[in-house]
Length: 142
Image (cartoon, rainbow, N blue to C red; front, side, top):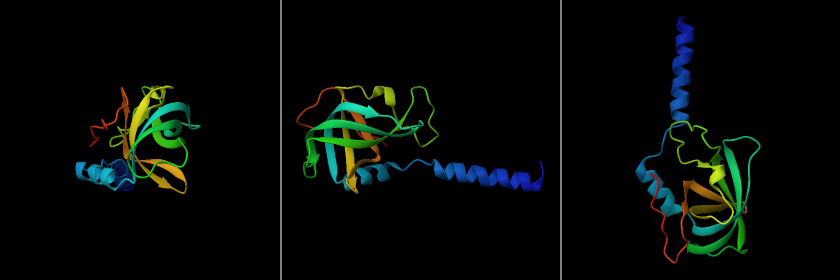
């Protein structure tokens, strides 16, 4: 291998490792604490991106708000990082959810920010909930 090729390989490895690095547990906790909303919602529909992995639009009814003011509308569109079933995520990207798991009628809990009128999951802090309830059930993803 030539010196230039070896140098390019090293730079590519550094770029890949930095791009896919996981956040520390403290950073995930801080992201949850900083989120403006903590919502529980029932899934009504899902719109897949043109290419997976990508951002799915999950339309659902907000059942409960554990933090933040209630949304103006009971039904919102939530942007969620998703992938196809069996599609591997790069290291540090393991919190991407399988699009096939977003079944109509299923429930989820998420830490959310509102940016430019769009609801976005914070630091992929989202999980499915077996049964919605008056108390949050999110266990944390770190």
